Amino acid sequence: MPSLGADMEEGKLLQWKVQPGDAVKRGDIIAVVHTEKAEIEVEVFEGGVVDQLLVQPGAVVPVGTVLAILRTGEEAATATTPAGPPPAKPAEKARLRISPLARKVAAELGVDFSRVQGTGPHGAIEKADIERAASLQKARPAPPPVAEPIPSAPAEAYQGMRRAIAAAMARSNREIPHYYLETQIDMSLPLHWLEAANQKRPVQQRLLPAVLLVKAVAHALKDVPELNGYWKNDRNELQQDIHIGFAISLRRGGLMVPAILHADSKSLDELMAAMTDLIQRTRAGRLRSSEITDGTVTITNLGDRGVETVYGVIYPPQVALVGFGRIVERPWADNGMLGVRPVLTATLSGDHRATDGRRGAQFLESFTRWLLQPDKL
Amino acid sequence: MTEAEIRDAVFKVLRRIAPEADLQTLNPTQNLRQVLDIDSFDYLQLMIGLHESLAVEIPESDYPQLSTLAGIIQYLLTKRPG
Image 1: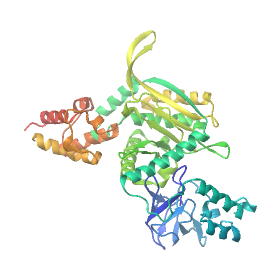
Image 2: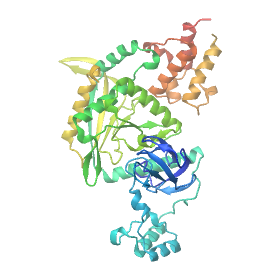
Image 3: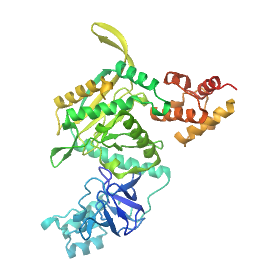
Image 4: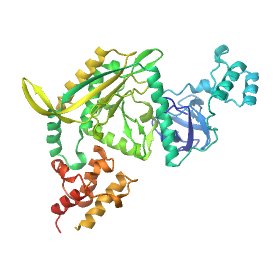
C-alpha cells in the first residue's frame, strides 16, 4: 500500500486492474485505492509479470503492506509494492519482528501490532511496546475498526478529507519553521503578451495567466534548486525532477494537490493541457498515485477567489510553497512616473531548516525575471 | 436560435462544470463565477463548451460581457440572430 499523503496511515484496496500472469510496464495502472481524500489509481514502478495478488478488494491495510508480488526481469519472484514514493519500507513491514509474548499480549489488549514501533533488538516489538501502545489507545478515542466500510456519503467523505488535510497541515505547523517573503510584480507585460498570444488562438488553445506562473516557478527552481527539495533525515534532499504540486479546490469542499510532473520541460501549451486535465481528473476523482505523491514544491493560486496575498503552509516533506493572489490594479511608480498597473503579489513560504531568507529572495527574484520574459518561458 | 435554446446550451455546460448547482434557481443577473464558484479554468471550459455547442467565436476581449446568464444570452443572441 503506497503512501499517498504526508500522513496517510492506511488505504482501502478497491479494485485490481490486473490479474496474475498479466505483463505490466512501469507506469501502468494496476489498482485503485481509496484514501481519506480520494480514489487514486495506483501505478506500478517496475515492469514485469504479476505473480500474486496478496490483498483482496475491499480490504483496508496499513501503508507499507505488500499488495502484490511481481516477477521482474530474471529474478524469480520479487516482492514489490505498487508505485508511489518509496513506500514505507514494505519489506520491513512484511517481516515484522515481534516476540511471541508481545503477539499474545497484543491479541489480549486488542492492539494492532503492525502500527507499533518496536524498541527491542533490531526494532523488534516487545511486550512493553504493546502495553505502551495499549495505554495510549485508551487515552485517545479508538480509531474506527479496520473492517469498517469507508463512508461514501458526501458529508462523511468531506470529513475524511478534512482529517487528512488536518493531519498534514498540523504536522507542517508542528515541524516546519516557516519563513515568509513576498514581492509585487507589475503584470502589464505578461498580460499583454498573453492577450496577444490568445488572439491568435482558437478558444480551445487559449492560455491562462496561471500557466505563465507555473512555468516561471519551474525555471526559478532550476536557478535556486534548494527550494526543490524534501526535508528528510535532518537534511534538505534536493530533487532532480521538478514536479509542481498545484492546489486544486474540490467542489464538495477540501482540496487536493496533484503534481504537474516535469513542469520545467513542458511548453506553455503542454502545461495548459496538463493543468486542465489535472483539474478535471482531480474533481472527477481519477488521479494517479504518482501525481499525488511526487510533488516537489507546491503552488497555491487564490487569485480567482479575490485574495491578494497568500501565506501558505508547506506540504511536508517539501520545503517551499509559492502563493499567488489576485491581479489587482494599483498605483505603480516607475522611473519617477506614477501609473496604474495590474499587480500580482507572489509569496514564498520557506522551510527555514532547509533554506534562509536570502535563498528565498533569490528565488522570488528569479521568478520575477522569468515572468517578465514570457516569450522565453 | 432562441433564448430557451441558448439557456439550455449554457446549462448543459454548467451542469458538467458545477454538477451540484441548482441552475433552475440561478439569478440571471448574478455573476456566474461568484455564484457558482467557477474558477478561471472552469470559465474557460464554459467558453469552450459554448463555442463547441453553438459554433460561436467568442474573443477573449468579450469575456466581460459574458459574466452573467443574462449577459451570455444577450451576447449569443446578437452573435446568432434568429
